Image (cartoon, rainbow, N blue to C red; front, side, top):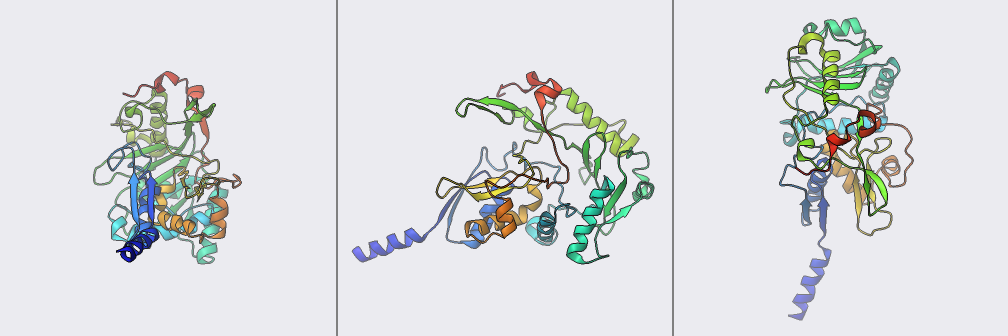
Length: 349
């Protein structure tokens, strides 16, 4: 019996267990990748509510997956991720190829083209530049009356056999904005990509921290949003689609709260002081695009096999130069700029 007990204890010591806090894009992808890499491991995932958590940034309807990054590292990651989004049955049933039209400044669009050609060779970029007049006349003329006066050029990435709806739109004009085409639900989604902070004094750390409001209605789909933000979304809709939206009234709104790093690089690393504690976060409004590959990156980090550039850029103490999402999103204190502190009270109703 003693020998059997010793053997059982030895086996138990070899078994690995993981506790994952948060079941969003990072947590869910990590749990799946760990189970594939270590089938015998015991993995527990904890979240704020039963799955899916309606407060999570990943639980939304305005997720855009694209490869057009001005940053070459993220473009390569996006290509890997897109292979799963389009071919893996686990992900492809949730992915809709609509194509994407950018209306940005010329220099940024040329950077995207250069990155594509660095990967696929000169002249082989899957995206190409369009004159604004040409862009407005395409797609059945649905953007003919759109106000794109702030854009120099537009970039079209064909991803679908046939364009049944408008493409995803990204426009840098009065406000950084995006729009998703209506799917089978016939719901058009418009997004204001300006970033906000909601700073509240945190007594244990004696400093102000930006945290989401505690009111459930200000974390989920509702009408509970300051009027000034509703007005901005209406402006965005007009700039993107012209008079097509003049008679439409939004059914509901949502403010999407996410961990945002200074340069939109993720944090995927060991905690510098606590043993066996690892930080995976800082989604910065674009981690969801990499859901199929994010867990693999975490497993590589745990095994010490992370690519050198990723290890440096995803580290706890890395430099914060540059910006790596498609918008250089500003962090604006919402109560100061818009005077809506009373709208973001600490009521938990």
